[in-house]
Length: 130
Image 1 (cartoon, rainbow, N blue to C red):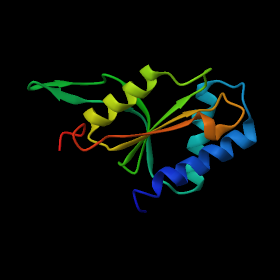
Image 2: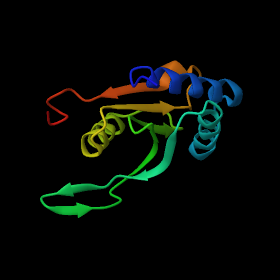
Image 3: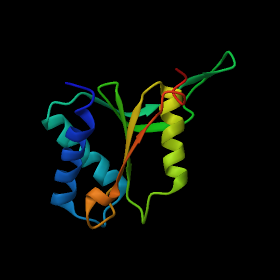
Image 4: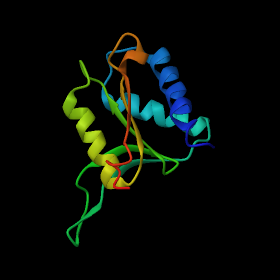
């Protein structure tokens, strides 16, 4: 699967979950249902992946937990809150930088129209350390 198509395919799975469930559930419920959709679409993913990185020669383990890492190319964070904050966006940028991945999606299922709850975060070349 092309890495450029991956966010669109995952968004389609998120839209299916939101269309079926609507708003008002917990983050965990949406995360579990998204896992079912991805599995049925035969998209390889890992859940609750610890963010491990090297800091000045020291290995730091489990600094954060990434909800989904899909095909070792895309980080997906599932939320069910009033709104996505600047802190949420900055956290995703940090996760991407430390994980070495380039693209992330923050998906807030607690909105009436899911497209307004989807935020794509991509690292610029200089941010990615290239």
